[in-house]
Length: 301
Image 1 (tube, rainbow, N blue to C red):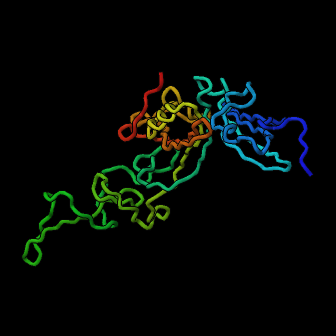
Image 2 (cartoon, rainbow, N blue to C red):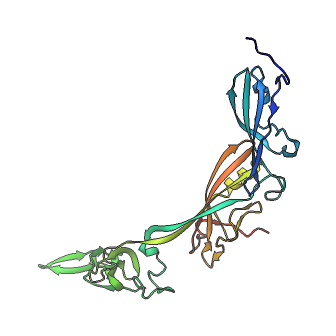
Image 3 (cartoon, rainbow, N blue to C red):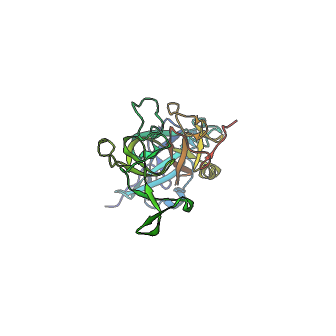
C-alpha cells in the first residue's frame, strides 16, 4: 500500500514541542531540541556546526552536536544540542566568558621531614622541635662522613707512618637527628633508637589543598592568555584582570618574604561547540610559592 502524505511535507526540519534550555548557574546554557524531517531532507545543509538556535530569543546558543534516528514512514528524527554563554550571565565583557566553577580537594601527602615548619625552630602549635637548630654536636651515634674541606683533613701517625684522615663523626641534633656538618648540610636521618617516634623516619604527612575548575569562553585570546599564566602565583582570587578562578571561600594572600599562596598549575583546553572549554588546577601552599622560583603576579589594578 502506498504512503499517503497529509499536512507538512517535512521537506525542511520542523521543530517539535518540548525542547529545553538548561543553565549551569555559572553562565553556560545548553539546549536540546528535536526536529522531524522527511528522509530526503538535506541534513548536511541543516546541521552546520555553530549555527543559531531556532528560537530567536536563544540565538546566542550555537549548534554543538546532533544525532539522527531513521523512523518509519520515511520520517527522520533529528536531536540537536546547542551550547552558549548567557548574555550577562558570565564575567565582563558580557557573553564572552563564564564564571569559574571551582571545587577543592584536601588531603595528606608525603613530604620530606626537612621541609616541616617545626623541623629546626619550634613552631606555633607544637610541643617540641623535631631536630633543633644548628650548630650541632659531633656524636658517635651517627655514621662517619666525608670532610668537605681538604684544609681540615687530619694527619695521624699510625705505625710510624703519616695517615691522612678524610672522614669524621657526623653531627647530632635533638631526637637523634643526624647531619653531615656542624651547621646542618645534608640530613642523614634519625639515628637514635631511643627516639622511637622518629627513628629511621625521613618523611611526614603534610596537608595539601588543590582546586580544580572550569570556565568557558567564546574568545580564543582568553585561551592564549590563560595558557600564558600557567605556573604563576597570585595573592588574590584573580589571574590578571580577566580570570577570577578562585571562589570567595578559598584562602588567598602572600607569605611575607616568600611568595603568594596560590599557583596556577594546570590548564587543559578543548573545543565545546563554538566555545573553548578550559579546565584548570590551582595548588595552594600555606608556606607560599617562592618568588625566586615562581613568577608572582602583581595584584590587578
